Length: 261
Length: 327
Image (cartoon, each protein chain N blue to C red):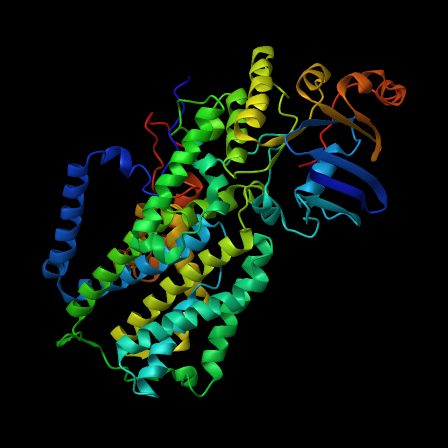
């Protein structure tokens, strides 16, 4: 069954076409990757899916529900969580508090309940903390929970970000270059973690990644974006042999530039 | 795992000094005792000044929620103070309501005012928000100055002091203790909100709006909540201010008033409750303590403020971590 269905999505900024009629799908329970040369529009597509950019045309559906007109927080609530290309944890807040942010959209205590510390609010607070700690344990962070999150080693920060996204209880997890800046042993852990997210939590995963070795190992389906156009889609073996993909990659210079956000 | 700093809490460094329940209880007991005996030691003039300082503690803690927690620069906070004061004034004088019925009305109008001004403006970036709130403050002041119901430039007078279960709250000492209670409630509410789902959401939105949205937090709604809570603090402060003085005029709600409250928040340290309390006391007590300098008093006060901001840009109150490193 299709979980995420992207149809005919076109996005342009001041006349420059970033995405041109992109069609794309992620099956339920899949681990899929989105690859492509620099400036191909991968992060822009992520931003469209998560509601940060508003495409001029097209449709984006999560399990049949149109999310294109939703605000980012509504998209998250409907079941899509994300991480950022450059880690964006909340400064001056503890690791646990960072992960607790994910549960905001799944909880409800308001001003009055919090001021009076009503039993329901207290139970909810305990639940939020417990679930955040469970998510941290799941991604392999079992200590340093009360430290300022932005002072953790880089590889840990990446995992805290994944834990934070998992805390929103998503159906689909979008990872924007999760392996960037990781050591090779951390990359191995990441491959294992992505597998466990799908197998143990039943969450589908879509990642943007430049480490082709990692992409080939971890993904079941790969989609290739080039100059805002989807040029290929298939299993890793098919993608490796696809002449259009090879041309797209050889035709551009090496090195990575960030795409904003 | 390197020994990285523990993140600072709303209590500033106090949680690391007062790390056991016993120490905390002793500290609270000492503060309460000091609050009770202070007016008996310093006399009536000082009692009036301290009452004013406690009013500023309430107002500054309210503005701290808006500025310190949610990171919204509000230059028109005195408007909510005015809404509270005028609601009580009009409701008691023109409609014969008693103070305790006028008080929830003041809160209600502050919430309405907060929503009216907040809904269209909280989508703005903070610098634009500052301008809009500045304008809002002036609109409220000018409206109060020109409407017949608010008594025009001379304001309202003859507002009766309230009764509470047979106790007529009328002397300066009575009002001092009332404001002590208000300040304590203001602190407790601030702490509880800071440690709640909503309090965390304010910090998330302040630190990174996009990341907060990506976590499913409706930033407009969360900011509006901060704005409305701040408005309620302002209105309650204003209501008791009106009851205390018995007379109010537009001059009490000028732009200078908004700036003074903001100064208390920034001076003490945004987001740090003990710092904000300290800031409120400095803003009120320093000009009094400098009275001996006559005409130079405000000049010395201003130089002092500049020096504090130069050497402690994040406020007087230290944000100490367990490792003792300063942020």
